Length: 145
Image 1 (spheres, rainbow, N blue to C red):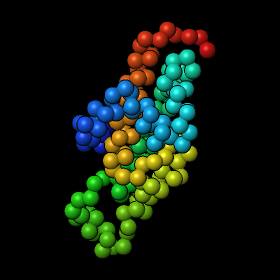
Image 2: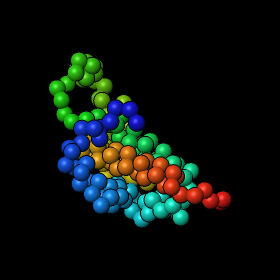
Image 3: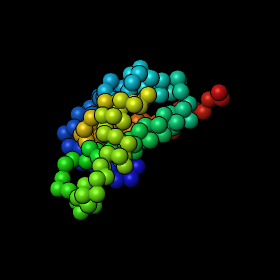
């Protein structure tokens, strides 16, 4: 996944998301436009490994779109390039396609990313989903579909 915003996630939050698979309810309830759609993908009898990987791919593409937003990182001192672009009248938002909130509002499958913390939590949930997907693939017999 590249440099991970979830690596900056507080250990207590990670622990809370790990407890009783709370990452599943967080992913479905906070970040999916259709919350019940996750249950298809976490159930080995309702989806194939290819379908789960396709969902994971969509999730990663959404995360990458969010990471390009100017508000995806916690505020810091402006760098030289940012100061230079302000002098030349090029707003940073134009390069990214919008803010986290705007990207979330225009997405059809995902929602709810409004801050760098939300993005870090979503990325951690994606990591947990991939682990769950790999575990299902390892332990579930191959079915002919």
